[in-house]
Amino acid sequence: MAETPSTMIPLGTKAPDFNLQDAVSNQFFSLNQLKSPHATVVMFICNHCPYVKHIQTKLVEVAKTYKAKGVNFVAINSNDINAYPQDGPTFMKSEAEQHHYSFPYLYDETQEVAKAYHAACTPDLYVFDHDLACVYRGRFDSSTPGNKQPVTGQDLSDALDNLLSGSPVNQNQKASVGCNIKWR
Image (cartoon, helix red, strand yellow):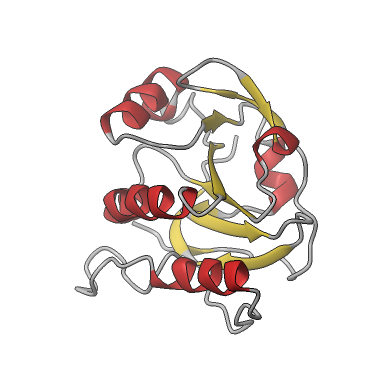
């Protein structure tokens, strides 16, 4: 596994819009349809990445917890499915159903959305406020495969808790580390 860090776009960056197909429902969704008046989490993930697999159960749990608080989550897979067919839409649907995703799992076939977000790895996480300005980008928590730290979702949860309470989000944010996005 080659570790790739996230790009860490500047805080305050506006979320680029998109219109992508959900692998489960086959419906197309735009960011404007999915955004929350409180906070919106955009996650670049895929099916096969061991870094995503490592946090997957807790990520689903955190998404469910914060969805109940008015936060919307959306997952996007931008990998090249010619080179990685296991990341294709049919497998995305199975993955989402098997792990009970409570959020859309969108397929970025052209990879233009990943490029617009400057996504570099999976998982790559972004939190946007009610104006769709980036207030957090980085890791889920300090756990990675093999480092023996528990998967908690603490970094993402702290950012969401602060945003929801009206407190400043800590600007000392650490990059996510994972598999690189599989570019064409």
